[in-house]
Length: 302
Image (cartoon, rainbow, N blue to C red; front, side, top):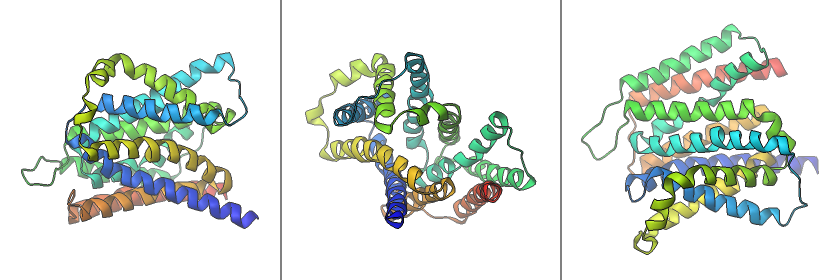
């Protein structure tokens, strides 16, 4: 029975991060046509996922949220979803899928600094070495970021900076609001997160959403938006907690490497990206640094 539980945890994590990998390609195509703005896409995503979580909550026992926690959840929605996802959608048109997946894999680096500041976790030479190696990889990406006239969209420095902001904000969200996240069930927490996220974005995107001629949108756009809402948001936010409950945190973190692998392979296959020795070198530097940090944390916990 225990073996089945552990296996289901591995499957849940693999599926979640594989979907995240596909989502990078989907969002690249979704925003590339400039049919609607990133803030409008974000609002539709938040509204759709929120409705699904509120409907799902009807099939679970009602969980009361303490009054003092509503403000915390609102702040969590602002930092961990509104800012994080909006910077991602703004960045994705200006970064290649490969660069996007490389930079987004740096979350453990930011988490390490948060742990050092909040939990007073010491910074070892191995951790510092990992940080330096990863930062060198990102710096190398920025220095080689140019806009090409070729059919393959290249990365711009602003796109890299937005992706760094995206990854940093999500790490801050996990570090700052971890007690609140752990306090409530996934369904309860997420239904309020998406409600507050929608309320934050509606004043900005409301008029655009009302004026959109949805019947004129290409079927591919509707399909990709549906994938973003149902699979890349609703299902993944259910799968990851399952993995966190059934396998060790270090194993969960290692599954995050599935995301860039999936994104890179698909992007090359569909012609969204190209493979070059510069990109391989940058990827090796960033991933190598993250592995050093993760291995150091794993060894200490063991």
